[in-house]
Image 1 (cartoon, rainbow, N blue to C red):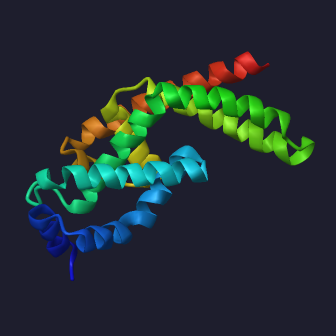
Image 2: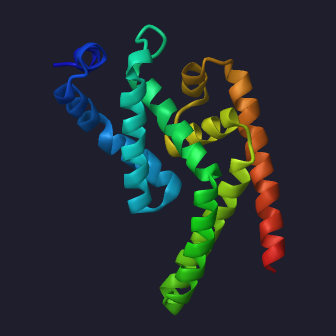
Length: 185
């Protein structure tokens, strides 16, 4: 059976078996996508589950003539990650986790791990201040390693616009990280 058949059965009959098959087909791929952005196994599992809940709630509006299912699902995943990373829940969790992690770190291994996590959080904080489209472009380019042409097709915008947004974001991230390192010294 193919995914079109499963989608139609879900849309028409709310078929649970088809929903399970469709979820199983994409679960690992979505989990990896989310994990690359969060670097937290449990959080990635939670967000992936929420992505599939969102997918099932909105599958009635999915139109295969507008986009491929995989593309549509990645849009849901990207938007969900952006929403979460902008949320107050995430901001509070990061402050709490950082304080707990700082106390439990082993001197040698932990310092590198902590530094990497701090850099990751700084980049995420800078990126969360950008528009949703810019965040999508950067996430597609970095985490999915898509080409500019592929991103342009996914977002239905000119490739030049994608490149402009991406390079502006990278420039902003560089400046932000330079300021981050200056503050650290």
